[in-house]
Structures are given as C-alpha cells and as structure tokens.
Length: 235
Image (spheres, helix red, strand yellow):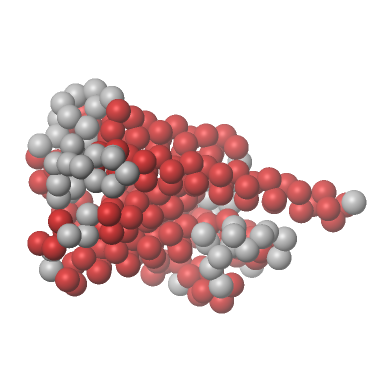
C-alpha cells in the first residue's frame, strides 16, 4: 500500500466521524476521484490553461506586479492539481492542499453566484459557455470536499490559505494598490444599482467575503473534528 493510499484510507475512516455538512460528497464518488487522481489532475490542468486564456484580456490591462491576483479560478484549479499530484507522489503539502481547498470552495461558489446575480447582463455569452462556466465551477466545490481524505488541515496551513485569499479580497475590492480594483471583470459598471440598495461591486465583494469565511470555517471544522476522533476513541 502506497503512502497516498494509506492517507486516503485514514481519510475514509474519518468520514465516519465527520458530520454530513463537512463530507457532502457520496463516498463512492470520493473513492472514484481518488482512484483516478491523475485524470483529475489532468482535467484541472486543462481547466487552468483555459482559465489563463479566458483572463488574457484582463492580464493586458493589469500591472504586471498584480498578475498573481488576477486569474482567480485558474489558480484554484492549478492549486488542486498540484496538491493531488503531490499527494499521489507521497509528498502531500498541507499548505498547498489548504490553498486548493480555499480556492475551489471560494471560486467554485463565487462564479455561479455572480453568473446568477448578473444573469441578464451575461446574455451575451453563448448558452453553452454560460452553462459550462456555471457547472464546471460547481464541480470545483465538489472536488474541494474530497481533500479531507488527503490532509488534516493543520492550523498553520489553513493560515497560509486564509492570508492568501484575504490578500486577494483586499486587492480585488478594497485597496487595489495599483490602478483600479482587480476583481474578475463583470458585465456591468461597478457602481450599477443592484438589489437591497447595493451596487455591483458591493454585491460581488459580499459574495466573495462570505465564501472566504465559509472556507475558513469548513477547514477549521474539519481540523477540529479530526482531532476529536482519536480522543473519543481513547475515551
């Protein structure tokens, strides 16, 4: 049995002690994804390449120093591809897995949220592209919820991910450092009136802040429940 297989089996055992809201993916689907881990890596790398192409126009209008904060979703899929590859090679990196978890939860939810919030304004997209973006990003959330099988989410690693995604929030919405806010381009003006007296920038910022906090809660909740499991067994 390889090191990666042993880690996955320990994670599978944890599934029995973790509440359903932390392990919403059916176990059979978890097992399938881990069994074909290299295929999952390849799919995410393909998604990363597509994502960098999709953001090419925004790269052109952004100062080079701020490029790391531009391709949000492509970086998330790159993180998870590298995290799973490292695990398969027996060299799992907790900080990388935590970044993958945060990125895939945050962007996997934020993109469908934004597509729904501005659905009328996204009418210029071909129907197939709209649905591809919507469902492929939700699939990112699904794969994020399998990562507890390969890591214990140590607090320091969660801290690394939290700092990165909080920095992303800052330059995207609050303190752009150079030029204008660097959030993903939306199909309306930032100050366009939306619902509940919010403008468009406020709507997308509120969504991403919420999802970063959600990812932080979920990662730490998994950590706590995994620590409680051996204590319960000894008690």
